[in-house]
Amino acid sequence: MAPTFGRSISFPLSPALSSRHHVRSVSLPSSRSHPLLAHLQNNIRAVRAWVAEPTAPASSGLAHLHALHAALAELLLLPEARAALHSGAATADCLLDGFLVLADAHGAFQETVLEVKRHAAEVQAALRRRDLSRLSSAVRAQRHAEKELAHLASSVRAAAKFPQVVGPAASAAEVEVSGVLAEAVAAVASASAAVFSALESISSAATTAAASSSKKSTTLVSLVKRTKAASSDEKEMAALDRLEDLEECIAEMEAGSDKVFRSILHTRVALLNIHTQTC
Image 1: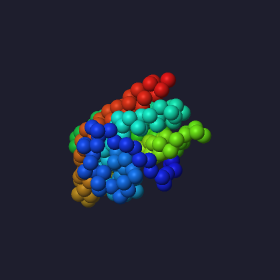
Image 2: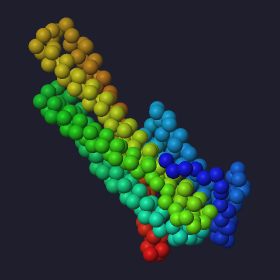
Image 3: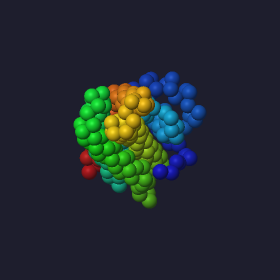
């Protein structure tokens, strides 16, 4: 995680931004900070708070990520922020690399969500029909998709260890901007890993319940079919409930995931434009 800098820069507001953000700046605890910078810091804190709450729904995590990127996009439009990055090519390079990792991870996540959705529907259909052969195949496919989610979560965590790179002659503005941007990358990476892991956990619980139900059904056929039929039905219903929970989770996450992916791409394009102008 990048260090938090105690000092705050005082960016002069351009006429257009002055009227747009006057109300927001009045409510800030410190008049020294530019309101857009403070707004981004508030969103970073909100994302971190979500990550620290284990029971928070994954869809709300995606909403926090989208809000953070919206704040980041506003900051990168600020001439003073762009000027600070102009003077720090090394910082811009690291930011581009960090957001490339995030974009790749979220792109792969969207594809994996579709796989999980498809395999979960297959598991559900096989379970309702009590087709053990079809169910076994669908469970294996679902397990494979869950492993991919775990791999994505692990790989994106590396971006959370984002280094802040500033030159020895860096200005206070460059240090402040690069520090906040480094924190933003780290927060996005941590929250992304948490979102990926949350879906993997919900899917795994559903898959385990379905697999357990199929094993119980086999035992029923071979041993005590009549005396434990009710118990088997309960297992099957529990598995179907888990699968419905997974289905609802995916439905909530699909739109949010797309928004986050697009916002990451937008942020990287903005950074690339700044970097190109610097070169």
